[in-house]
Each structure stands twice: as C-alpha cells, then as structure tokens.
Length: 288
Image 1: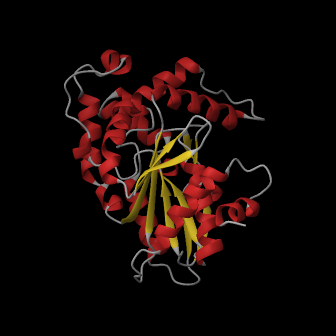
Image 2 (image 1 turned 45 degrees about the vertical axis):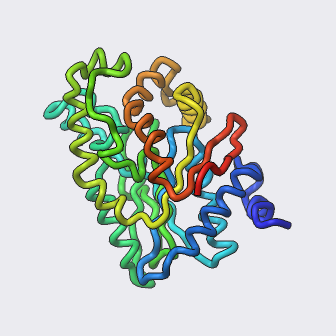
C-alpha cells in the first residue's frame, strides 16, 4: 500500500478526500519534515481561494505528518482570527462601511495571531494554548469557553487561509474599481487603501514565520462562487440559521476579488509548492 493509500485508509469513513488530495498532502508533509531542525516548530502555510480544498488538504497534511514522520501538528485557520462583529462595526463607523464584512486584510485580529503562534512555539510540555474559533453562520467570534486548545509544543503548525503569505507588494496599485461592489461602494478606493495598509503592517510578523508555503489554484472566480455556495449549504446543514444565496455570495466574493487575483499572480513565484485544483478535486503539482 502506498503512503497516500495508507493515509486515506486512516481517515474517518466518508471524509471528503481522494487519492489525488492524499498525494498532495503527502508531498507537503514530506517537504515539511525535511525543513531544517530548530528548537521552534516549523510553520507550514497553505493558501488558496475559497473552495480550493485547502482545509481538507491541511487535515490530510496533519495526519500524514503524524503517520509517516512522527510529528504532532496543530492546525490553525486564518478564518478563526476574524474580528468579531463589535470590532468590525467599529471599523465600519471609523474607517469605511465595507469594513463590517469579514474577509480582507484588516479584518483579522493579527495581534491574537501573533500571541497564539508565540504561545504554541514556546510552550512547555504541560502548557495549554487556547485556539480561537469563529462561527461563520453567526458571523462572530465564538465565546472563549467554546475555543479548543492544544497541550504542549506541537511538532509543526499548519496554518491555512485564503491569503496566507500574500504580501502588499503582490497587490497592484489602485487604478479604479474592478467589480460592481467597488464601483458602488468604494469608487475612490478608500477601503482598498486601508486594507492594503493593514496588509503591509502587522501581517508580515506572521508570514515571516512560515518555513514552507503551499498554494492551491482554482480555475476562475466562478469556481470560487460555486464552492462558496456549497460551503454555505454545509454550514447551514441541520440548522435553521440563514445562509447566503447566490447573489449574496457573489457580493461577498467581490470583497476578496482584487486580493484573490493578486494571489493567483503572485504564488507561482512565492509558493514553495503550487498545486492546481481540477473541477473534480484533483490536485496537480504545477511547481516545486
């Protein structure tokens, strides 16, 4: 049995993975295990647009590190560091109304990220590190008593998120709106310039810790929209809480569009491993 096949066999029944995703995860785990040894656990960044499969790949990488390399990894999501509603509403009043919507750089609690990374990387054997959690349906940070935790120092930190590793210099300067949202609600680029300043500010404190960066491309923005609609169905399954319809998802994705396109342009030169996701969730290695 090959390593990817063994990895699939170790997953819970029904987990949404296939041989291609397992092969990609094994390759990332192998590269992560070969990083130069230091006292601090390595940080592995995994990025990709919404619906690219990065969350699934991250879980698989964590299992591959445990099975084949004896490394117990902690898994963190950029999404879990979004500011809660009160903070975003405050930004909407003081900076720009679009700040109310989570997503772009500036809507993450980067200081909490820095504190969490530092706690994990320097933890003693019995230290307990709280792991933040965000409820996407409620669009708010989960109460602290609902957060998970990690005991001790992990063998690796797996950090996944749509813009993980994206730098301000990767994003083209403002030359005018590129979609209906920007044309209607940010025609002068005030919100965009605020987000760019945030991306150039505290985010590099996290990006600079990444020892290996893997990126997953998707074909186009329509794929992102379709994937987000599926995610909404999954989030709202067995729940009577409202979900976004297609129009709402299109508007939501337009918040990210400028940065998503910059990510696609930048990752061929920035990522250590670049995968292209096919419509049937196959993962083709493009560059390494």
